[in-house]
Structures are given as structure tokens and as C-alpha cells.
Length: 215
Image 1: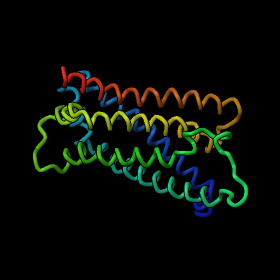
Image 2 (image 1 turned 60 degrees about the vertical axis):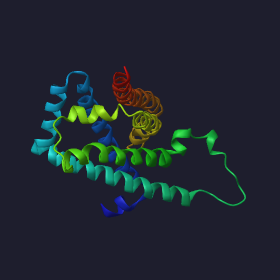
Image 3 (image 1 turned 90 degrees about the vertical axis):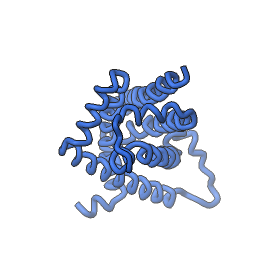
């Protein structure tokens, strides 16, 4: 097991598996956030359940571990890829053989991670460790969407996440061996649809509540 994990393909498999885990998390997270459109009471009840349920408490730590592993292996894989690139007299135009998203996964991933840190500071840590008791998670979440620059950062971050997911989705399944000519095309289409649904879903929440705040 250790030789496989330490191998190049092993690192990519771990990164792919943790990536798929995070893809599932995004679906769940979007579903909960969509409850903001239902009512304040419904969203607060869902938020309270997520915070107090012992199973959710364990899953929070599993999620955090998944993020950490994914980030670490992404950095390791990117470093190994850069070391393996040919240098010297030959100049290779990689733009003809790869997409912009695939060439800039580390950049888009790093920018999305920066937003995640900001997001955690503004929501999760205030809910968990804030000095003032939060009476309504709904108000905490929606009030920030009334701040134009935060909403702008939020929307730009999810545009970057779309670019990241658009390649990450098909890349994850390709690494796991599901990459014959027929399914590779399908994964690309499914990945684009998935990325659009996830990112437009989160963007619609931010845009809608920002619009409500200025009416």
C-alpha cells in the first residue's frame, strides 16, 4: 500500500478520491443553502441540525481532513509535474494540447481556497466560536450579501470554482480509469453541467439577496 501511495499515480488517485468527496459535499452544501429561499425558520432549523447532530459533527472533521489531504496532494502533484516538464532548448506550446483550466488548476484552486478561508471566518467561526451568540444563522448569512464587495468576491470566487470544477470533474474519473473514448466525452459534458449547476446555484443566492438588500 505504501509504495502505491508514494507513487505518482497513487498521489493522483488520492487527489481524485478526495476531490470526488468534495464534489458530493458541494451538492449537499448547495441544497442546504437553497433553503434560504424557503424561509428563515426552515434554514435555521437545517443549520441547527447540522451544528448539533453528532453524525454531522463527525462529518465536519472528515470534510476538513478531505480538504487538507486534497490540498496537500494537489501541491505535491503540481510540484512533481513542474519538475517533470522538459526545459532547455525546446519550447512546448502546451495550449494546443490542453485546456486553460487544466493548465491553471493550481491557480484557480489557490484562489478558491483563499475565498474558503474568508468564508469560514465570516460564517463558520462566528457560528462556532464567536463571542456574541448568533440568534439567526439566516440573518448572519444574508446580511453579508448586502455588502457589495463581499458579494462581488463571492461571485468571482464561484466563477473561478466553475473553471476549477470544469476540469477537475472529468480529471478525477479519468485518473480512476474511467477514461475510454466514449466515457471521456461523457465525463466532460457531465462535468460542465455539474459545475454550472453548482456555481450558478451559489451565485444566484448571493445575487438574489444582494438585490433584495438594495430594493
